[in-house]
Image (cartoon, rainbow, N blue to C red; front, top):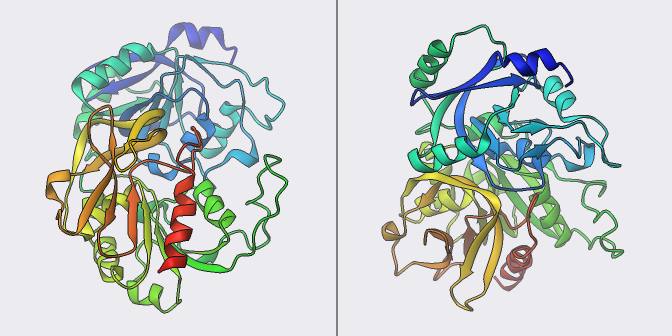
Length: 383
């Protein structure tokens, strides 16, 4: 961290497909990576962000200027790996927090993930907002020229029409937290966990641990299955409900998942989050399209249309369900984003099915939307 010559020389760099190059210094693994460059406006929670499987294929720019202070710890992982392709920050600091068990640098180097500091992240964020999400090449080794980095970024295939869910999904089915060690509330509440009396199946398209925790805290026994598990195999498990998880990249590429979800409609109650919401949109006859620069952060206002209640939400996605593509006779839009009026939630008018685009498990983020997990429980019990 205190290699002042490296910081001064800035031999590492981020090259964008539009030809822009940002000199930097490396504080992660000494490897080079390609990825889609996005920005996240959240202030806390960088560990949860980089370990979220939804960031597979993406290089994450953090708009908060000081990063690293809280370190890394075993309790705050959202999956077993760091899934972001790379990390961009303005200033990196050594950890100084009582919960820290390792530094961000150490965690990145162990995972083989590069990171750059010393970049004007405000200028980079403005560029991404104005031009839209860009393909990028993160050069941490300093062995390529800037021109070569730009060429690599331009030649990369990108995330459109790419199935990344199959890359991050579990390979084998498993029951989540059978020993009930991961689902406790860490001192927030003294109430014991309810009995796991409601059997559900969760499709893992890139699921976060905190989503599974929230389901378990509602008294659900969660069996997690791989992304491509056939609908018939899921129904053979006799679940009381099916959950469709978050995940990375383009929902249009997951034709197998869309067909499986379509086969489950009318058979079992369902809830979807993020990519699961988008896949449900396809299964119900809708379409998705790419947002200009995506929604990534912890401060997005969402309006629940029936009550007029506004929730501040955590979000991470680059695609959205096209409101005009939905069958209004079968699907009702329940939530909209107050920043751009995009679809943030929907429900089936005739079947016990609903979904939201944002992340009610809030890791990181506000807890305004946590009620949705209880809503799923009520939907199951009333079906």
